[in-house]
Image (cartoon, rainbow, N blue to C red; front, side, top):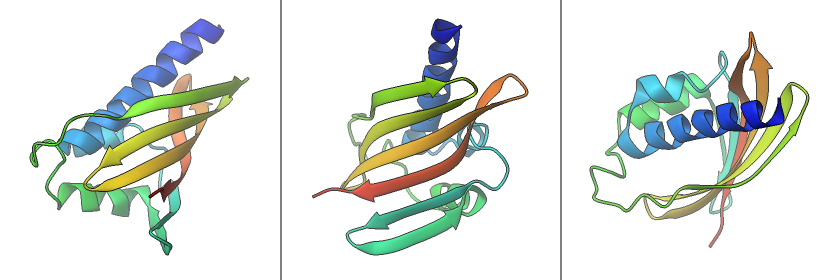
Length: 122
């Protein structure tokens, strides 16, 4: 069961990365549960949006791919316990050095992001 869950989570995170990197909002939307909260800080400034508002922002900006950036996003670690999991990700893009922590839950046999917190590290 662990191997099955880790494979499903890796696929979810791959879709998340590709949604962000290529500006694929449908792929990105499929990763989140309804109206997921997103909290973070960008160079000390507080950030809070719902996943819907976040995805709208992704739709209205140039993607890292369009800007000819190199894809350097990666999974740092995943911790699974039953139907919950935590994924730590390194998401460098658009001149930022982001680290994301995704709270995941298995809902109707499918892993979804139910909360995201992130920070930019100099």
